[in-house]
Each structure stands twice: as structure tokens, then as C-alpha cells.
Length: 138
Ligand SMILES: [Zn+2]
Ligand SMILES: [Zn+2]
Image 1: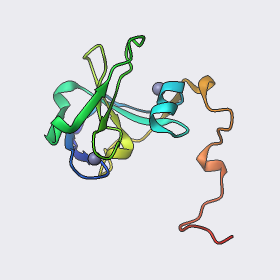
Image 2: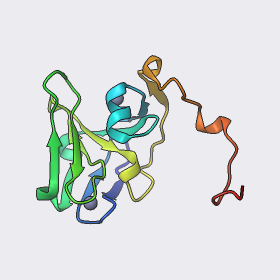
Image 3: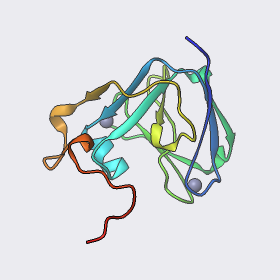
């Protein structure tokens, strides 16, 4: 696979990281934990190997949250702005990158929905909705 170097950052800019490749997995996760954490319909996550991930700045400002009852799932966020940040899977085998925090195209696109049965009851695919390039006038 072609090596793609891509940077990511949080909303306030205190934290920056870099990925240099991926595990070939980019997916939307509809599980209830991802919905709670993102506050959105689903997470959009890219998986990379631990050696494909590096903090460029602000690592000390990242808070990790490790729920007791999960095997894989954890979360991380910026202490200042609350943005979702990359987290190590509990297994240590992969780093989960919240794709919305990437600053460039990672060279791979989402190809599946996981935990789709757990999706929000109000969920509607973005592609089914009208599209506006600005805030629409009422
Ligand atoms: Zn921040
Ligand atoms: Zn999930």
C-alpha cells in the first residue's frame, strides 16, 4: 500500500498528530458508545497501526477515557476544546483515528457501516437528504 502522510488536529489547534498509512479500514460506527462520544449519528473511524501514528504536539493535553466494561473501545479528547482525538484500542493492536479530525484526505474512503442495527432510531443516510452549500434561508 502506498504510504500517505496525513496530519490531523483538534478544533483549538493545541493538538496535532500524523499518520503514515492505514490498516485499510475506514468505517462508520453506529454503536451507542460512538454515538454518545461523538454526539452525532455515527463515528467515522480510520484504523492505523501503532507505528503508523505519531503525536506532533499537545499529547499531554489529551485525556484518555477507558470504560471498564469494553474490550476494544476507548476514547480520547482534547482537554481544551473537547475534540475527539485518536485512541489506542485496548488490545494495543490499532489506533482509531476519528476521521473528522484529519486535515487532509487520507487516501482511503469509508466502505462500510458497522453496528448498523444499533443506529439511532432517527437515523437517515446523509445521501438521502437535500444538500445546501450554505445555511438555507427559511
Ligand atoms: Zn483542542
Ligand atoms: Zn462504535
